[in-house]
Length: 202
Image (cartoon, rainbow, N blue to C red):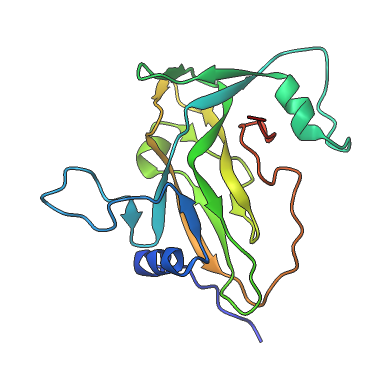
């Protein structure tokens, strides 16, 4: 029997947050649009906006090739990237330039026996897409059991620079309910705190 895929509405996303089966830190606010609140509501009907963090990583050119068969790829990538701290002046992403970003929010999709289990995917926003901004390549999936901010593979496919600012809504998170309770199988990027996928020590 085929189980229908169920995408959560904004009401169900907020209910999942209240139930603890979805954790977003800091929580996106306000929860509903209001004419008296100038801050835009980050909840679309079937997604919630996530913001760009204050660090991006730019790959460094070198006499090496990426070999994804070698363990510890996140550490290798981190050593071959340059971190740039975003300020209020923003970062002008040039045409055809590629950088790694990260969401300001930390996402957690707990696997708890007997409770609802969620998975997600990140998608770009239409306004940026119309300017040629790509926020992920082939890795939109946020697996059940994930904990940490989300890395964004950002590229400017347009003809003109696109300015990236910290805290700007950069992507949208879509949530889906998982059929059954999966066994944990965390990736090498679990708990990442950097765009390259490593964890900074305090």
